[in-house]
Length: 424
Image (cartoon, one colour):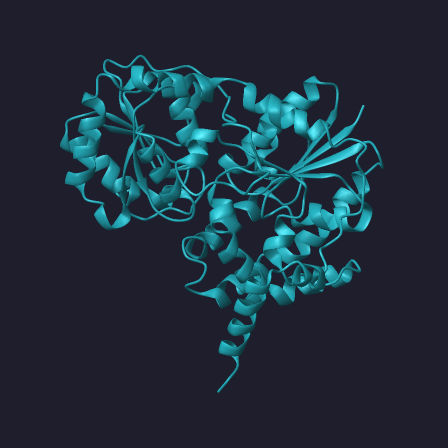
C-alpha cells in the first residue's frame, strides 16, 4: 500500500477536488493523507480519508478575512501582501509543510499531489529528498497569471522565501516561473474545450476534465417554483456589491431566489422580498433543481452548474473569475458581466434571457454529461499512481545552460533588453 499525500490550500474549489481524487486513490488501496486547512476536517472524514491539518479553524477564517482585499489586486499594495504573509505566519507554515511531507515520505512508496502555485513545500521536498510530485491546477488562471505571480514572489515576497529555502539548505529561487513548473507531471482539472476557449495551458499539461468536489447531498425543499440560486462561493475574495446586485436582479424580473452565503459581512442589510438566505446548501442536490444560478465565476460552481445543465449568469470579478467567465461565454454556455457593468437592469436582462432559453439544457447536454462523469477523477488518479517508484531529486536548470540554448536572434534581443535597462 502506497502513501498518497495530497497538499492544497484555499477554499472549496481548491480543496474539494483533491478530496474527491483522494477518495479514488483510497478505493484503489492506497493510504491517502490530505494536508490542508483544518476547516475541511469534516469533509475529509466523510470521504474516509486521513487529515493532516495545517492550521486552526480560527486561523483559517482570520486569514481569509485578512487576505480578501489583497487577493483582488495583489499588485495594488505589494508591501501589504508581504505584511499579510508575515502577519499570518505563512513563511513559517511553508517550513512546517516541508517537514510534514518529509515525515510521511517513504522512498519508493510515496507520491505528493500538490496544488500548483501553492505547492512550494512539495517542490522543496522533491529537491531535497527526491519525492515524486504531481502539480495540479484547478483553474486556467493559475497558468495565465503565472508571470505576474512569479514577479510578486521574486520582487515582493523574495526575502521571506529566501529565508525558508536557506533554512532547508536550498539556494534561493530566482526564476519562479520555471520553479513552479518544475514538476514533470502537471495536471489540469478542466477539459480540452474549456482550455481552448482561452489562453491554453502549457504543452505537456494533462487536461483531465472537471473534477466535481462538492459531492455532499441533502434534502431539497418542495419549491412551488424552482428558484434562482445565488452564490458567491465559500471564500471572502468577493466584491461588496455581488449579493445585492444579484438579489435585486431576481426581484426585478419577479423570480424567487435562494441566496447561499456563509459570510454575513457580505450580506445586504435587507434582502428583497422573495429572496431566501441559507448559510450553506448541498449543491449536488440543489443545482439540478434550480431554474438558474447567478454566481461569481468560481471553477467549482461553474463545473457543478455545467454537470446539471443549469443556466448560468456570472457576475465575475477578481482573480480567476473573469477568465473563467470569458471561456464559458466563448463556448456559448453562459453569459457574464464585468464589475464595471454591474447594474440591476443589466443583470436582470441576462438572467431573464437565460431563463427564457428553452433550448439551453438540450444544447449543453454533451458538455454536461462530460462534466458529470467520473473520468477526470480516474485520469488524475492514474497519473498520480504512475509516479510511484520514480523517486529522483528534482534539479533546477542551470541559467548558463538556458543561455547556451538560445538562438543568435534570441541572444541579440536579450542583449538589447539588458542595454535598455542600464541607467543612462
